Image (cartoon, rainbow, N blue to C red; front, side, top):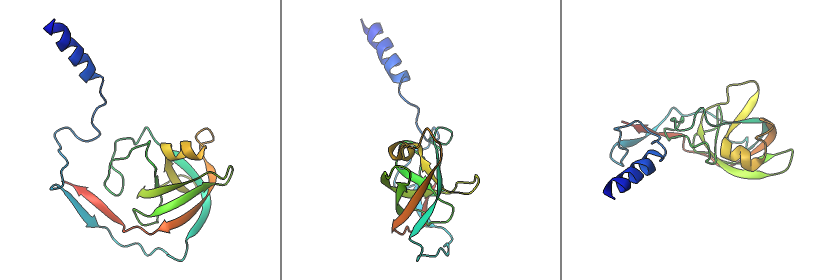
Length: 152
């Protein structure tokens, strides 16, 4: 009977997802430092932007973003080349008028003339996963502090 329980527990444990950090690294409040990055002289009078957005997901899932947090492809975040990190934006899909509030936590996109790279979760809610790209309007709601977390 005990062997069956042990086998069941082993199987159950082996089916859990792997951690999204390096093994042996325990992230605690003590070993996370918040550090300011070089200030970007972004024109804060530009509160509305229009352009092409794409999305990114599985290839980057679990990796560190530009602000130091772990990328969650199902989260509601985005990458922008110049907006300060941690800026809160409203993104509207101009094809279907669906909108969503996202936070800038990464840098990019670095393909073509795109202005935004949404997480897979955001692209799904904005309904452009099948198309891959879509024209969007970005409205800045709150300017970010442009800080990143440094993990020791």
